[in-house]
Length: 179
Image 1 (cartoon, rainbow, N blue to C red):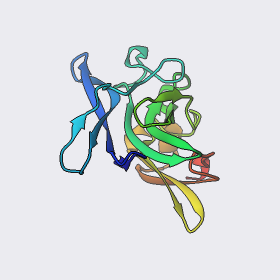
Image 2: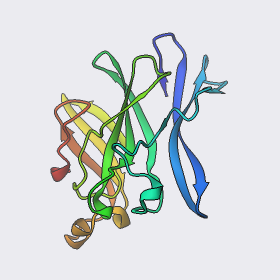
Image 3: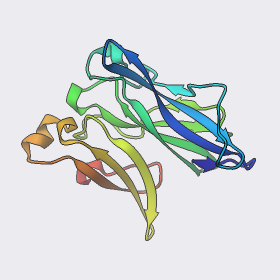
């Protein structure tokens, strides 16, 4: 939940559409509130969906769902940025996890960008991404279950959990190799 320049509160959330039995296609939606009590869904829901130019779709058949969720919205560099749990459209199936990225000037209209990270960093997902500055150091926090780690990470004895990667700024680059 963030407060826009006009004083309106915006809540961004994950939407899900069932496909092929138990699989689902995830997207990003929004609701607004003047008082944090009463919420109205945005007319343009969903705001964002995975775009095959950069992101994997369920139809690619590489993963159990179309991962495009967990929006984290922040204001920086003169505009709004959204970090998204997503998967790249290339690379080994178990190693496609990326931090998706979208930008907006007004929180209403979003433009999907290329991911802020590259696949091949050892994760099938980088879930629930958040960035924070702690004692002057930018950090990316995310989670990844053990079963969603790339096989090479599982072979190395790594376990799932919450991961922290240093960054030079809120939009990266993020040091995932040393997370």
